[in-house]
Amino acid sequence: MINNPLKVITGEVRFSYANVWDPKSINGGKPKFSVSLIIPKNDVEP
Image 1 (tube, rainbow, N blue to C red):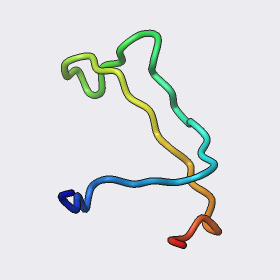
Image 2 (image 1 turned 180 degrees about the vertical axis):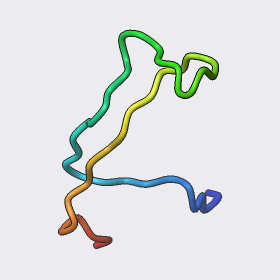
Image 3 (image 1 turned 135 degrees about the vertical axis):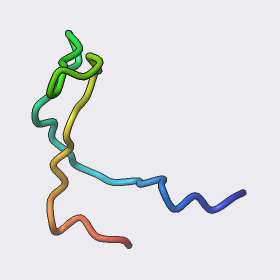
Image 4 (image 1 turned 45 degrees about the vertical axis):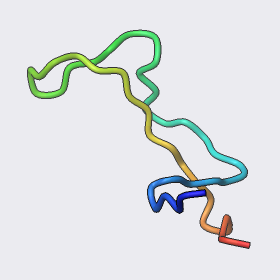
């Protein structure tokens, strides 16, 4: 198995600014789907 530093496994998360139904354009750029994740600070590596 290859260790991927970009892979994150976490427990509880919440979505913020979820643009999952319609893509949104930022500063006139190409419209894209996006979401911001809120991860609790007490969610640490075991």
